[in-house]
Length: 252
Image: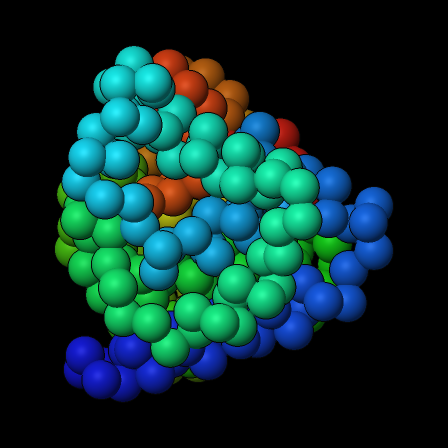
């Protein structure tokens, strides 16, 4: 998927997310998302703010306020924005849907999987159907698989072979894990909510390792949890190490 196609999908997905959010009750806005410590409204604010990045000076000031912790910076900015009197996240998503402005620390390939995955962070715990475009999900999965921080997917999923059943995409070596590309994208970004959609001999091992930490059959687990995300991303509680594979308490 080239640059222009990616930006077209990003615009479409921002508008689709706005349409979904418009249907939510006040209670649903305040429910936990798939990102630990983030409500639905906080994740929505994060996505709405992506095309409205602060200045370099503003980002520096926010970084100082967050004690130099990038994940806390993301969390605090989104939570404060969501709590602002009169803020209309749905209107912001629509107003800036076509914007190609980027935060200084990321690129359009990251923004593509960012909006895809965060839309699921909102939709899944609310029981809403919000399917990803298949080609975009494949592009997002390839990007996540080939990048390092913050997911370390190739390292964390060492010992598994992931194969999409709805599009040509396969990575890794080891125990087979098969399923729709959107479920695999959620898996490699640290979301256990997709496990029920996957099949193959590797899935029981993944389930055990998600319950006890690092999802790799060749690496002993350390603790129960999950990474939400970044680029920039919500989800990782302040003070956690970036290499920790955290599973969220909101996962079904």
